Image 1 (cartoon, rainbow, N blue to C red):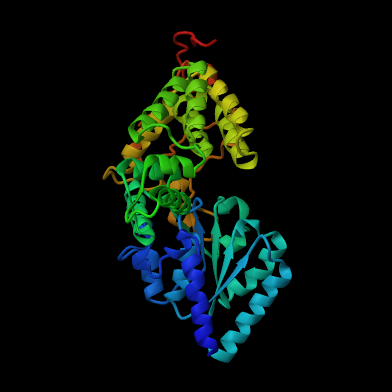
Image 2 (image 1 turned 180 degrees about the vertical axis):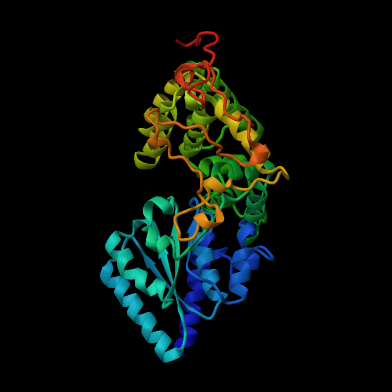
Length: 442
């Protein structure tokens, strides 16, 4: 009888759960997005199907399925799934989880997958306690994080785990997800409403389904007993308290384009206008911040190296402060980037380097640059002839740093704008970079 009551309780909870929880995939085949990880023949799927999953860190933005994927990885293996939260758990909780894993292995012969949500919140003491259990395979760590784990997770723990990147869901994936949500809610939606849901969510599945659930409730109330619940654009706008793009997707992307081109074109006022318009329409401040960080290197580059620092600081402020106050931080970055001297030479240089990397040219590491720290390396020519630049009074020596086939290929050529004007050529004995015309902003 207890089992029947538990099953009934679970069924009632499932029926009353948020839409995102009700639509949580029950198999890897049901996962929307992340095909590079769990599609047929993809690495994570292969490891799970072979029951050879080792410790992993799942890194990706909110709403990309990290927790769901962790559960499915456990269900696809013979191991027990044990979740703990890095925010709520302490060293004692970690030790208890490890002790339970040891008993489980001894008594049942069953391994343990320890899922640590927000693993970047684990302090050093917690990570140090966990490390031996991960190292000897007592537990398989599955950590989930929205932060760069190389900055937040101890190197010894990272070296024992494989890092997998989860990407925001594409528009096509979001369309599939929203269709599932509408089916679960017994509703339909017009094209504008679906486009608005996709645009507002920015690849976040949970955000899209949460908004959809509220929009369906509003549409049902408006229908007043009608057999068909039809979600409209107005329902989606109301579901987000009016903070939604007040235009179609084409116009949204046009405004983003106008924003970037205004800052690139050194018009601070226009940049501020488009930024304010997008924020007022409900644009995600993180999206604007990301675009500014990209622009700092793509369009300002070495003409003002400080531009990237300013853009990055604004992006961090968005995460730390949030709207509406973070609009000030974004505005400061917009003004700085618009007023900065411009150069796309870094962008051009990277493009040229990639062309050579992706060509079929044989490009081996020159012998004198190869690793020479181990015994007998010199006997096979590794490191022989390498000249240490700091031994020269000038701090520079002439020697080859590229493969033979690429020697002489020039990628980066400083412009005459801003700080880039002062950059020296590679060879100090060569003529200084051409100053060219004066920077129009100076």
